[in-house]
Image (cartoon, rainbow, N blue to C red):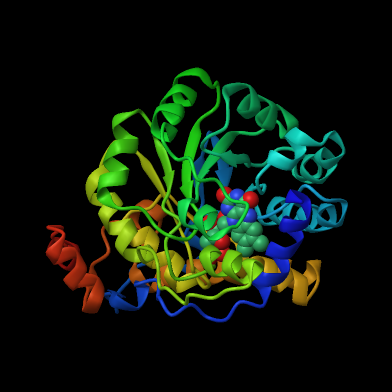
Length: 347
Ligand code: FMN
């Protein structure tokens, strides 16, 4: 049942039309620099994440595993991550905890990427024992704990019990030996949620904002209905709420609807630590080949470097001094939420 659901997710997500809710990055403009005082070779987009070096601050975000047919996809994604020098997360390992034979489709990720950053993934309601098993299964550098209430509520067979999840995350933060990354799946997080996570000691949060893959629509489609609600907090808005709230307390991963280098750089300028991309990479792989995915990632890396040069930023850290002007709906939302962004425009 769960295993078939993962196959359906791939198919339905690939056929999903553009979401009516936008990421908000269309309201973020970076101020061009005509005199960058830099040469191409000097621009260095590399970074460190979980004690390992990445060639660019990029994560192939959690998608799949748990079925023999999915092993090939995970192998291809992990091979590409290894070649490109970026991080990768596996999809929920719940199926592998329930069915031993489902493990191979996850283990293959570590096999194809023996030294890179590999993240485990389970729902945030998992037990300590389950989290340890998921981490050990792929020798993970950290574990993503996903929050997906709108997705569960849209599923006929979904969970309906959400009490105690914050307390569970707090326990896992205290008892697990690897870092925890709390993650949304495309509905974004508010400053109030960021605060509650920071207060219990979470130091890495993937905002998983709205504007890209829509899991409410995917599950409704599976259940044979379609509400067309635009539910969720757009990615750029969620990121700015988080940056304000988590200053010095948690690293943020910006994800949800990010498809190209300019949005990656915008997110990095706003202050995220890493950028996560899921469905757009799956699409490149499934409609093309391993080679297409490698080429896509190489171009993405080169484009990030190109934009850094045009902004006069030699390093990723330099991007946080670049002026960014916030306009439109994103600006109005943030004003009403008491988040001042004018200083970003005059850095
Ligand atoms: N997120 C999880 O935390 N666990 C999962 O098992 C998981 N499965 C996914 C399966 C597919 C086919 C896709 C497209 C996404 C999945 N996600 C899962 C959500 C992604 O990690 C990501 O948060 C979301 O798709 C938004 O990013 P995107 O707009 O770049 O796709």
